Image 1 (cartoon, rainbow, N blue to C red):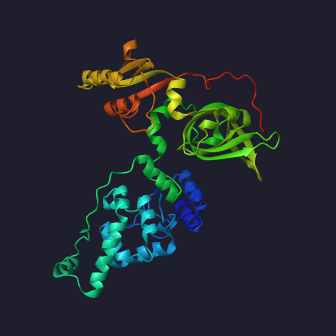
Image 2 (cartoon, one colour):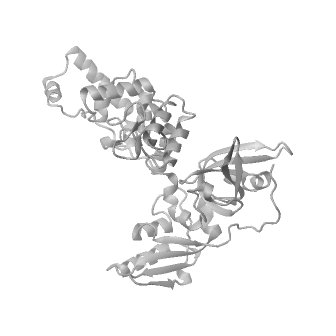
Image 3 (tube, rainbow, N blue to C red):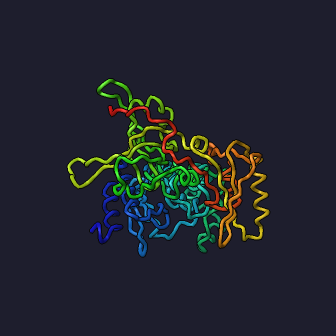
Length: 418
């Protein structure tokens, strides 16, 4: 069934783990690895359990699978929606659902994982107004129960008007990174994007091998890999008591175990931080999985570990900017890049690649146009040279040319396994 009906099979598998959040995210990640699209939970389309999406190779995230919601609240939401129609607004939802089963904690979880996104109000604004809307909704229910609603309320209900007369306080949106962190916290996976997406120029520049098909890669090959430190586990060696670390690295394509033995950990422990974006230089290793002779487990034995933001300075040789030369605004774009170099001056050489329909011309800019390619610590677009240039010229228009050597430091001796 898994081979012929993957979405249906995985929906049943994942739904069986509802209430067991330690295991549920792992099955959701497995479904994503199988090529199934994971669609975010939605109060107007999702069911309590995970469900296949008709006509698509996709799974709709079940409301009961969201941490902090639970089966009772999820089933109550679906029942109300099927009885009285879709929820028209956040205040309409709160008024109809009450505060008993769908309490403040449930609302917070649903907002943070994006279940109200289809209503058109950003998550931070909803989250910051939960208490006010709950009070307003309770008052509305009390008035209706006591017959105190006025004629205009009754008329509005009769014509099905949107229950949105509770003004929401204006609150700035969350950053993309914070919104994704909340998704991971409540749903177990990133749904609307991935924190590494903002680093795509660095991944293209410094990662030497794709890890999409780990088992097809040869063992004992040296690689540079970009990923998020999903988990960081520190242990002590039974041999000499020295600490070492095991990282789970999320590369957007897959996850891989990174072994950081004592000698390496002593030098790079400062970079081994949970949720940090890292550049790991090391050797891929294959070993047989326990109990399955035909299955091999691939891990990465780290030799050097750096914060990803430092990769341009440590491994970059020059910055290459591509400009379409057949565009009418080519001279204007060149001038914009020139001005951008003055905003981010540095020591790394810059080259311009003029892209014509039938040829490419590379021009080395003078030393006065050398730039600082460092990525902004908060990753906000436009706050470093690379993202600023890509805002002007489009995605994939900037590349940092990396040194060919995998490692920065010469290998003086083999590092030992603990």
